Amino acid sequence: MIYETPEAYLRAPRKAVALFGMSGLGKTTIAAMLREAGEWFHYSVDYRIGTRYMGEHIADNFKASAMQVPLLRELLLTDSVFIASNITFENLAPLSTYLGKPGDPSKGGIPFDEYVRRQRQHREAEINAMFDTVKFIERSSQIYGYPHFLCDTSGSLCEVVDAEDPQDPVLKTLSQHLLFAQIIGTETDAEELATRFDRAPKPMYYPEDFLRQSWSDYLAERGVTDATVDPDDFIRWGYRRLMDERRPRYGAIASNWGVTLHAADLAGISTPAEFDELIAAAIAAKS
Image 1 (spheres, rainbow, N blue to C red):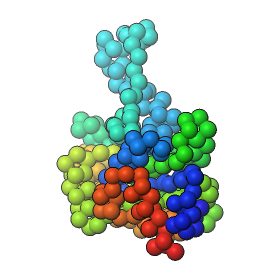
Image 2: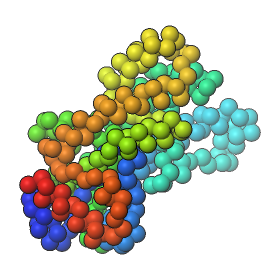
Image 3: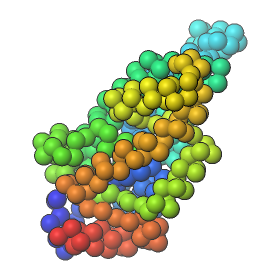
């Protein structure tokens, strides 16, 4: 770790931390608090994915839908309207909409092969966005004058790295520039996240082997075909499986490359100084 002791972190003139863990445990909330305090640059990996690397895919998907409407088709063909994604740190709906859900087109699904293709695009985009972190650490200081840097990672970070490989290119590169800090929740938190997901299922990123096996298992269990799958039912069905699959992967990143923070502790802080104390305590616990 780049900060070997709590004191090394607290005294560092330029602090850099990457928060990771299940979506919904507070990464973006903490990042927003630090950003609003004025001394921390907030780098959102999901935002970078949705703008720099998948922005064109997202816009083209919007345009393909608009071309089905005669009025919009005419306006698009004459360059009379402009269609673009309005993605923000807080609203990643354009990215989620593009990833989509596999299943019955009449229920908003897309063909499974197309779903896999978009998943592959997301994987490549996420890896590139993680590597971009190093560049933004430099830019945040040199251009914008921020002394400290917070990387708000995607919930699928654990799916695009191998925490057990000391030569993993993403983890090895970034660990030289920042501290990885896992946010870990309780079983109650996991149940709340699952309940929240059931109310409003959203597209997710799956590692391809896991996705294909899950799809095969789902078809057999439900007795349906690719074209008759209820997209929301599959996403709900797969959510807990995916979270169970991710848990040990998150833990391995923290164990081999960083530290662990508890969601309940993070929920109780409101200042950068309190955040620093939590990070310092996590480094001490790791030692």
